[in-house]
Amino acid sequence: MKIYLIRHGVAREPASADFEADNQQPLTAEGRDAITRIAHALRKLDVRPDLILSSPYVRAEQTAAILAKEFDLQKRLVLLELLAPEGKAEEIISMIVEKALVDELFIVGHLPCLALLASFLAASNFDLAINLKKGGVCCLLADNLRLEPHVALEWLLTPKILLKA
Image (cartoon, rainbow, N blue to C red; front, side, top):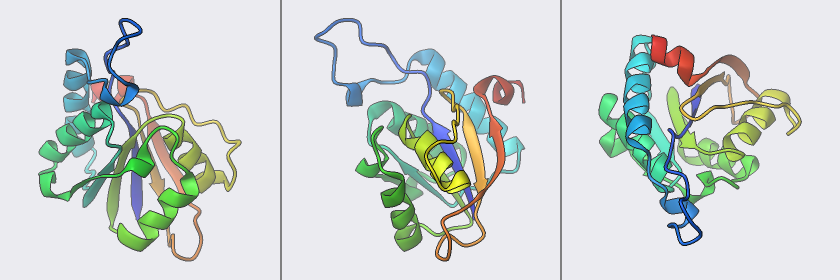
């Protein structure tokens, strides 16, 4: 199983104290454009997701929707609260094993959740520092998550590299 951890694109920053809640921050126009181009780059890399799981936060949901359109997976996009920024790696892994075992899986979310998930899967602890930039993608390869929640880190690409593809 290949698991692609994808951090949402660049979102609008809070302009003032009365700005909408963190979970309502949308992608900027530049963020939408970059994610569209990153989705094209992933297709060129022969990435073929079967399912997209996403945080319900607006910026992640918009990122996931762009990816879903590129890969024709609009009906295979699932929003999950456990992928919010403070999501727990163990709960996410349990959910994948119970409901989302596919050949290739996109997980769209935030820091620190995605970095902690990658750290736990790759190193069995939360001390491995994974720097996943906005729009960055981390590819993990799992032999059998049911038997052992450990993976190999296949690659980690920054948006800057993906946008050159």
